[in-house]
Each structure stands twice: as C-alpha cells, then as structure tokens.
Image 1 (cartoon, each protein chain N blue to C red):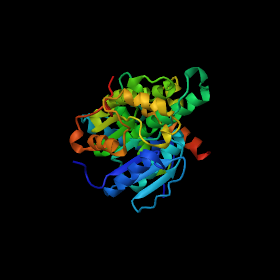
Image 2 (cartoon, each protein chain N blue to C red):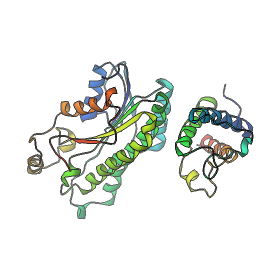
Image 3 (cartoon, rainbow over the protein chains, first blue to last red):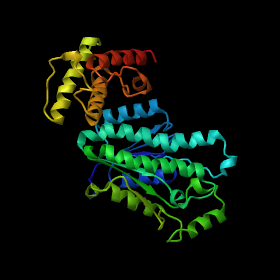
Image 4 (cartoon, rainbow over the protein chains, first blue to last red):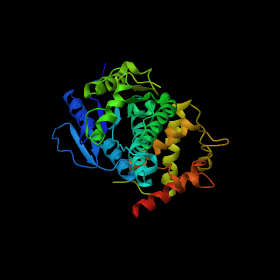
Length: 236
Length: 105
C-alpha cells in the first residue's frame, strides 16, 4: 500500500527516467519536487522544479530549507540524477572521474543526508538510489561509471544501518539499459553483448523501474532496507 | 521578527533543545551544569544517534528563530582539535561564528 499525498523529491527530473517518474507520481496525486541543472517545462499545480547541480552543497541545503518551509515534510527521495561515461580507463581524464563522482555519488550523499533530517520527524521515509547492472557485470569500458554506482550500493548498505532506528529505509535499484539519452552513445554491439548476459534478454523500460520503486515505497516494505535489486535477471 | 543573537540566547536555545532530545531518548535530564554540560564524547550526555537528533533539531531552530540555515557538521567543525560538539558552550561559540560567517556571504 502506498499512502496518498506523499511529498516526493526526484533528482535529475528534466528528462529520461526522472521526467517520467515526475509525471507518474503526479498522476498518482502526490506532491512532487524535481531538480536538475536544466529547467523542466512541466506545468502542474503539484509540481515544483529547482535548477541546481546536485553536487553543490549550498544549493542542495537551500532546496531542503525550501521544502521544509513549503511542505513541512518529505516522504520519498529518489536519487535519480546520474551521468554515464564509456571509455577505456587508460583513456579517461581525471576531470571525467570527478564529474561522475560529483553527480552520481556526492549528489546521492548530499540529498540523502539532508532528506533524513526532514524524514526523521515523521518516523517515516523512503530513499531510493540508482545503481546499474554494470556493477555486477563488471563491464569493460565502464570502470569509472560502475565504481560510482558501486559506491552508491555500499553507501546504501551502511547508511541503512545508521537510519533504521529513525523509521527510514534506503534501497537501490540497478536497471538494465533503458531507452534514454544516457545510452544513446553506447555502440549497438556493446548493448547486445550486455543484454546477452541478462537472464531476460531485452532492454528495460519505465514500467520495470516503477515496479521496483513502488515496492520500495510501499508502507509494507518497512522491513526492506540496504538492498539492491537488479533488473533483467542479473546478479552478483 | 527574529530573536536577538548572542551567546546567552544561543545557550538557552541549546539547553532547551537538549532537554527535549534527552527526554526523547530515555528521560535523563540534568541540565544544572548549564553551558558546561558535556554533550558528546567521553562523559557526554549524547550517543552518536542522540547527537544526530540534537544537531538536526538545532539546525531547524536556528532556521526558525534566527532565519539562518547552516550545516553544523561541516569540515571546519570536524577538523577542530576541540570538537564544538563536546560542550554546550563550545557549540554556542561555534554557532555564533558560523552565523557571522554566513551573514557575510
């Protein structure tokens, strides 16, 4: 069961999975707050958008001050913002490593830290992070991207123990490739090789993702924390 | 109208929140030592999760009553030889410093 009228914060909400998550949760009647570096043109009386870089601590803190003032609470945080990069490690500039860790890991850390401060008041909260099947599959060319996501999985496990007594759960979803801008640059043969390693051999879609997210958000999932669910039949 | 900012008001605020935090944890409340109360580490009244609750509540009250938003557990706090979280008095001094710093941003 998912409570009505939840306040849900989604990072990376201007396109791809994040944009679809915003539309989905609005259609379910929830208050949705989104953020991304670019604007989101979506107009809805229950949607509020903030333009920011998820690794900018000051901007992130200000966003949470705004949420506290306007909504007084936060029920769900979905750390969806992410950058991908495919390159041989030898050919990867340090700048790329910094950019990926800033957005993927530091963003997840900053938002999770501030979210818990708001969630603890109601003794309820759900944090959902994004990993990737590139972690268990150890994909060549994705060393840095997978390392950032692996960091998120480890963070999820340890942080789940630190916040369990506050009634807050934190879990991770590891999608297969989904048709979004993120995989446009991935060569077709690489995608086919990747899908061949899944038990269920197809691209993922938005419904696959929302199914797992709804499971994590469900009030009955209060005994599920620190977990990572991979789509497509991929496992460690 | 925001409350007046000085060490005395900050200490009062910290003690009020501490009383509420300790009540939430296990009902031990002995604040007779005032600003000399040891908060965290050694014989401090708070364990790590208690300190988390306390810092979050202090940050919220600072926002509500003084209109300043600060993250108290920052690099500066963590790298000090004497932790601002060890005593009420040190925390009050540290908060005043942070507020002054942020008002100059």
